[in-house]
Amino acid sequence: MAAAQILCTKCGAAAAAPAPACAKCGGPNARVCGACGTQNSVAKNFCDKCGQSLASLGTIAPPPAARPLDVPPADIPSTAVFRLPTPGEALGLPPAGSALPPAAPPPGAAPTGARPPAAPKAAAAPPLDDLWNPEKPPTAAPTPPAPPPPTGLAKLKPVLNVAAALLGIALAGFGIWRWQVSQRPDVVVPRLAAQYLEALRTQDYARAYGMFSAQARASCTLDEFRAIRDTTAWTWSDLRIVHEEPGAILLEYEYTLQTPGAAPRTDHVLFTQEGDNWTRPYNWVLMRKVEEAFERGDADRGLLLAQSAATINPRDPMAWGYLCEAAYYRKSPADAEVRCVRALDLAQIYPSNLTLKSVYHLHAILADTYNHALNQPKKALDEFSEMLAFPNISPEDQCQILLARAQTYRQLSRPGEALNDINRGAQLCTNPQDLSFIQNMRDALRVPAQ
Image (cartoon, rainbow, N blue to C red; front, side, top):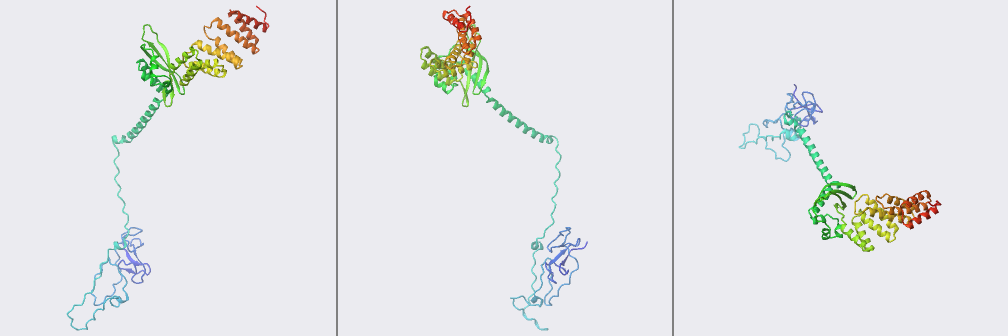
């Protein structure tokens, strides 16, 4: 393979040393690859095109320049950087600024005692790599050996990692779900109700009192609450939710007094939401004071106490029943209607101490209020029908309801239905005044006497 040469890119002259400029014409030199002929920088050690080494030069080179006779030959290292001689150097003159050398002695003259100075040697040139910093061809990085295929448990490690991650996510989700379930009212309230009943059973009244709402505690003291409790031993069981609405949960349970022959009974306990907590809206102590006030004939105090009781437990039918009765006797028909309807609606959901007789009395107040105060006879008819549907009504009570309803039918110009009630009343009424009223109604309806 041909070796690389340094050739002038202008005149084509060859150079023996890697000089950047042609010594002949001053044109730029190039290192020509002997393999592919590509011109490379003089500083290159490898061809830019084929990568062939450019270190060895060709054997063809110009003859060396003539040297002065008085200068001994010196070996010029091949790595030295050559430059063109200046005109003075070409004539054998010393460089500018230096002292002239002594004149050479004439031929045949004996040399003086002083030896002529030897010609200075050329300073060693720095390595070519340091001057030109040639680029070296990139060396390919060794390819690492392929890892051995996984065996045994190593094959299962990715699967186990994924399974562990999924298990962790599932456990976290299950924990969150369990916590959310534990905070649901239908879970929290039965637990609180069980604690409340157990506190009552063990006569731990302070603990039970602590579960009252703030208004309930303000309406009675712990001693008042303890005073109305029966100290007979008892047990409870079968606690369950029977009604639930936003902010209120009603529970039912069975209890048995620890007395000979005592049968299980059913009772209820109500919890309502107060802020973030569920508490007992206990107002029994206050309701006893309401009853006492009405029994004494102190309707004004009874009304105030009933209002407080309804505020503590807005779902207490008995408290609203007292408010209804108070408004009726104070001749406030609009208030009486609202409170009586509220009491009757609540009585269908929330158990209370309202007896059938008390509920019957509320319907009677509403019927009279609709008939005579609010001028709504059709609503009065509904109340009369509700009263007649009560079980075990005495004949005298049925007589009064039928006569009142017959008069309402007549007012609505429904004589046929009025006559039916008059005829039924004639079979039940015994009071002379009621019998006289029946006859007058027949005359008004132009019905022959019987």
